[in-house]
Image (cartoon, rainbow, N blue to C red; front, side, top):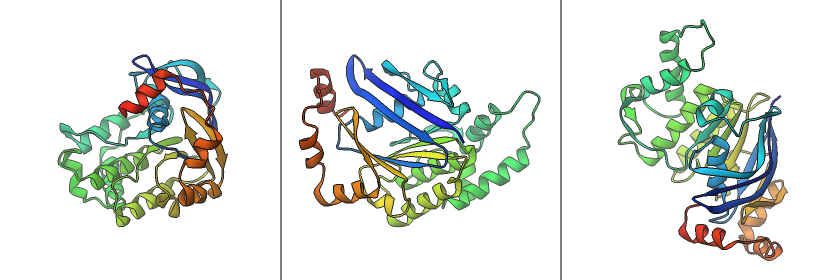
Length: 266
């Protein structure tokens, strides 16, 4: 069992404060869902955990199995078992999926190990089929010309191949039809177990009809203000976020935070 621990995490971008003291502990074997209104800091948290260089941590710590990983760049965090599925995956023309993922796997080899390329290709094609993509995608340029659903399935395929300890899934369900959503949920379930934990960031209840979270958290004004179980999801579905704002209206909201939220960059 591994642990990802976030302690009093504050972060900003371009001098604009976004996160205001996040505290969260996750263990492998657990699925956590993170919800919150627009501008609450959900995507910022995802990017900070993954080591995005544009964000500055001004206070707090992130521990992976007791090791402080704040000084690690995104590549080192990935190798150590942190995976981020992007809200809006980018296109990378000129680099095929096969070559891209082969390189990612190569940097994970221990000294003296060599990759079995034939076994890698066989596994990748099997995973592509599992997530509902043609085996021929292995020779396509990464995300170029992909539909929104195909991009999300590609993110899922990468996660299954890499088998991370902790996957941060930033609105993986956005833009998916019901069949794609079921495929995504099934793919996550293939990893669910004692060696895998996930933080599912979402606006919507529907993905949790297929993936049952162990814990649900509500992020508001850069802080986790409520934690519980499925009952929180049901309450949000029935009443929206009005009660969250009413209960936590005294949470400090700086001018920088208001500006960033208004700009839609959180």
